[in-house]
Image (cartoon, rainbow over all chains, first blue to last red; front, side):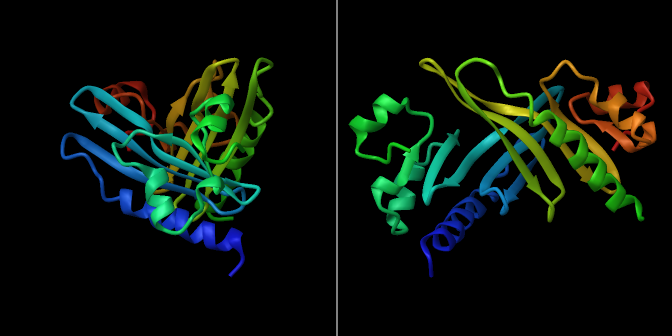
Amino acid sequence: MDKLNEYRIKVKHLLTKYLQYKPSYGDVEVEQIFDNEHDHYQILSVGWNNQKRIYGPIVHLDIKNEKIWIQQNTTEADIALELMEMGVPKQDIVIGFHTPKMRYLSGFGVG
Amino acid sequence: MDKLNEYRIKVKHLLTKYLQYKPSYGDVEVEQIFDNEHDHYQILSVGWNNQKRIYGPIVHLDIKNEKIWIQQNTTEADIALELMEMGVPKQDIVIGFHTPKMRYLSGFGVG
C-alpha cells in the first residue's frame, strides 16, 4: 500500500476511536467530519450543557505532502505517540500547534 | 431535485464563497472540510500570525432531517439570511447556537 493510503487509514482509525468519547453531561453530539478529498479529518463536540453552548474541535488531523499534521488536540491523549505506535515515523508527524521553531527542536517533522 | 440534494448543493456553494476570506496577516490557510457522507460542512482557519497560533472553525453547517443547522459562524455575515435568499425556507434553518427555547421565539426551525 502506498504511504498516503496507509496514513489515511491510520488517521481515520485513530479518530474513530475518539468518537466514543461523548461527554456524560448535557446534550452533546460528537461529529465526525472527514474530508477524504482534501485530507482534513476532524472530530468535534457540539450541543448544550443546560444553557451553555458546547462547541469545538476535539482532535483535528491533516495529511499534507505525506505527513500527518496534528492541528488540534484538546484531549489528554498523546496523539503523536499513538501515531508512532501505529508505525508512523516521528519525522512524518508535524505538531501543527508548535511553532515552526519548536518543531526543529523536538525531532518531529517540520512540515 | 430532492430537498436533501438541493440543500447539499446550496450549503457547499455558500461555504465555498468564504474560502476566499483568507486573513491578510500572518501565514494562515483556510481549510475546506466537507463530509458528504455525514453531511457536516465546515471551513476553518489554521496557521500562525507571528508567534500566535490561529485556529478555529469559521462557518460550520450541518444537514439533519432535511434542515440546515448553523452550528458556528464567526463572520459578520448573516448566514441564515443568505440561505433564505438562496430559497431555503426559514423553518428549515436551525440556529444551532441559539438555545432550543430561543429557537421557538425566533421563527426559525426548532430542530
